Length: 118
Image 1 (tube, rainbow, N blue to C red):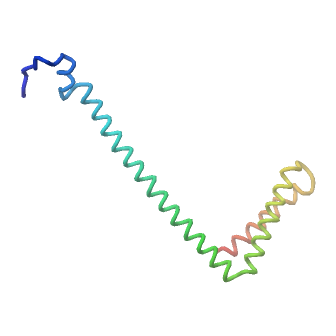
Image 2: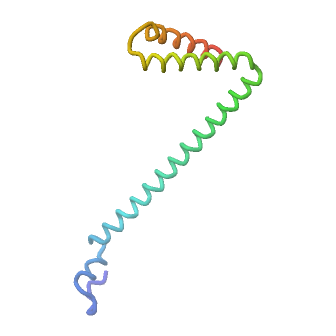
Image 3: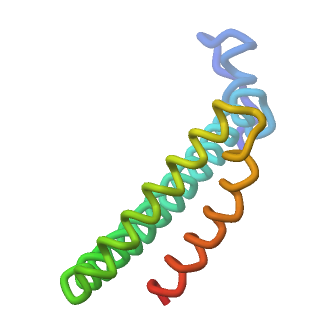
């Protein structure tokens, strides 16, 4: 360990080079935060890749189902359209028959759609 101070350096420069100094602590914080950033970036990238793969697989299943069962696909799409229409109609009218009928119809259509997809 060299305890001899250099003549051309100021006391602040000499302190900055010591292991327990604020500069060393700041450098350590930078290294730790850079490592944490890298880990977070990798985790987000992995999650994105996994999600993209799952969405792609689900899309392919839906495409193959619709190719194999065009009639069912049309009925499912029609049911979803009617359900969304009821929901939108019920949201614009606060009371009335539409509001009372929309919820059971949408629930029934949702159950039918789930039966076809499973």
